[in-house]
View 1 (cartoon, rainbow, N blue to C red):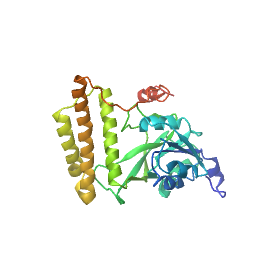
View 2: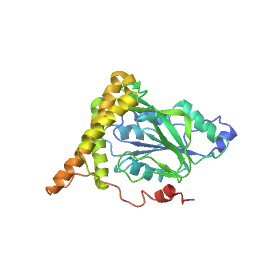
View 3: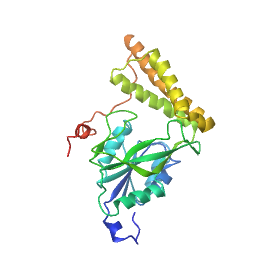
View 4: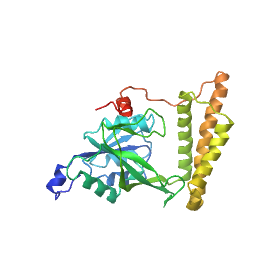
Length: 293
């Protein structure tokens, strides 16, 4: 919400909708919403949380709270962007924060009207058990999260989908904060869930798995993140974190292998639901091919 004492230039800047997707984030949702209180609209899209997330979000007077079945981050964010009221959208997950520095950079960029580009990439500062992970493959973590809502769409993937944009999406100077891991048990369950979703995506794409995927990809994931991407310098957190990433890779390709084995035995894989509604993915082809307006 804009301050009473805002300047005329501030008052004329294009309004921004903040979009927050969430599931069982009672620990983080209040701080996330507080970091967005400068936006003109805050839309919370919840995936039917079973903790206090809905109660906390509804208690935020400025937040508009809706619930929708979760078919993956890409589907949820595409659908949610279509529900916002303003042309410009800032996207966060509930375990992320817009820092004061990032807010100031965005507001300065919007102060004199429409920005030069239609989309912008934001760096993320990742926290693991209360401390920033400086390496381990996350030192260059960045995602497209500020855009004109008709200038970008996520591809139809159940997990790990990067937004496609119309035109370039330059990187902003300041970072958001991402409190990715607070509880190792909860995070290991998330790794298992993401591995299942990734395996389901691979199955839909007709991918197969064998020793090269189960062993080779898992081993390479650890060596790459812990060695080449300097996870060793993150200490014990780096070791645990990089092993968890390798474990996720192992699970994904083991699932794919096991499903092919069972398919020959007449047992179909337990795939999650996918969002195949054309409306969710509308405009994606035009953006990817550059044929849109």
